[in-house]
Image 1: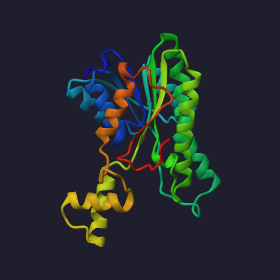
Image 2: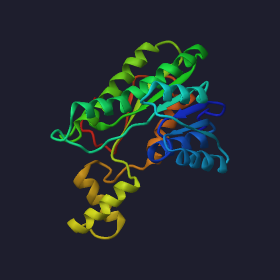
Image 3: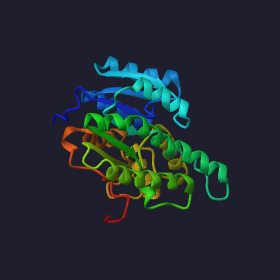
Image 4: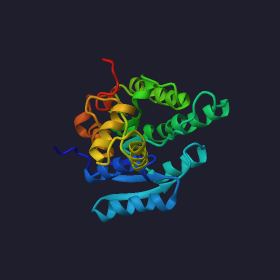
Length: 263
């Protein structure tokens, strides 16, 4: 299927590593011109260079989106963006006893307000041109939160909520607003953590056995494994495509069936 992304320009925030990197690479492979964003200049350049080496179109941009100045700088280089993927964010694994009001405020600024800053700067141009895609990266913890990292869970819930509000705001403009909600994704830190746990719990030495046991113990889902960054990226690419014009305000779960609810 041709996703119709040739000639489209995309900004993927937080794309110098991990899931964001996979999203940037996938959009570029589908023909989009991609702005790779990060805070580490060397990593960001490396991702953009890798995309170009593979025949794609990419340019790097660095900036702290938790500040107005940083968001202004990124928006200036990004230019007329057709596709905005708000992926940048972090989690620190802290629980209720360790958290302070300042830490709640800090994570909200990075995980929520940074995305709002980019919406404010880039979506008006999409509206004027009559076409655009705004995609947030959320997660199942937004609606099925755990006891741990409540501040992070709350920021995911905010992302889900603002996605639907923005979809209502953009009604009839040709610009859609959706969110992709990944489950547990296999990254190098997750793999390393699972291998260490396998030695303690006796999950075996073969990765297939370790992954199945870790997924069952930590993130039970119907597929019985961790998701791959490329699987999330493919969902994002479809929502960014010309074929997704009738999808807005949607929560697309890519979690192997982790979330146990109908709505």
